[in-house]
Length: 385
Length: 183
Image (cartoon, rainbow over all chains, first blue to last red; front, side):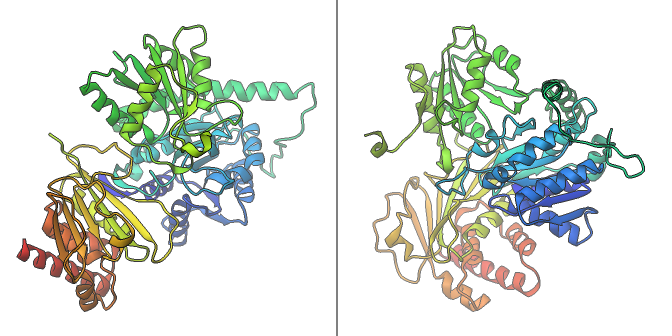
């Protein structure tokens, strides 16, 4: 049934139906509404989970790691500086192969302090071994949690996953969402059956040190599992579509790309505005299209290459910057297109919550078509002196 | 045909502008259209100028930018007109609802209908506090036709409980009847 509600509450409700057994989180804007709602459900006994209150994000994810090691399905949510504080634990969670699912309500990183949206936080953890999904709207923000648990806990994956959605722009927006029922979620997501867990009756050690003669093999296996998760995402996403009508089998979404001259590549909520801008441009004879990256890790290089085959220019919108280099998505797209002659222009856009309008998307397409790119889009003049 | 309609609410922190946007969206959705409500994400301070937005459409709403060319504007506090260009971008044929007991003397863009209502007095009468959001929601329902009064009542009842809900509904109904009478 379609209901209208705040994005954060829709996500909290979806997480509840995934039946997490342990939740540990620390409140931080704009993620707070999710964990507040979950804490209330636990307090009201409508969610049978252990809710661990902690003094920091470092402890939140550490508690999740421990609970996952003991064989529980666990959940956390964070953003921005909170995720930065989890940096070390993020690498450990992936390295120890614990299928923790965490919502990242995307927000800029300081300094200067900004509570507003961009995707610098999760992008900065791109090398940590977590799967990364990016939602365009609140429907996806909820659905991707079911998918994330299914994929993360798959015996061939066993890796943690971020479900990323834009802070405020999605988390604080009321819009209609089709919520699954508990029975539907149960039929899609069976209880977590850990392959290996800490058990005093059958002791094992997890996450010990590896000397130089073994460390690389561990890293190789994480990389292989993460790359291999693409196939599990496709199968699990297809099954989701067959059961509930929304197909997530593709790691990318193509919008009016089939005959496009100029392709825009982007992630997250900005893609809704881009789609509307494309419809307007099409009316004026500008053949633009969109390639939306829904799964950033594993990166769907083959799909990107296939989807962009035949376009004459590519504009990549990055809500992040690898300072001293380029936007993270731009670098991936260029890498995917290596060996082709397709020009790729990168645009750093919408950092720290700067609003993006349809006319901005059109401006970017104009810039791309005239070969001007690899810039911060829409800077104030005073910094350009 | 342009099916998208947009509302921008101007208020001050503490006046319930974000709640108003949310409840208007809930009422519109109950009436069978797609709706999207979101705040202009500022640092929340009581008394500071705030904005909230609602979009209505017959199809799914994808656009995520703030509202720059609204069809409707609600001004919760007329003292904002001095500080903020509340009329900015309003479409020709648009409707602006201003909470004031005085006539509007400021320059209003051509082709825009301004409806003034003394929502503060109405809110004080029904709620005992000068929080005008539910009152102005009633005025918006009557002036715009985007939402009906019954789903609006249900939306208010979904947010407030007991006597608080009854009082807010009475305030909304009072404004609804008043604006229906003058338009």
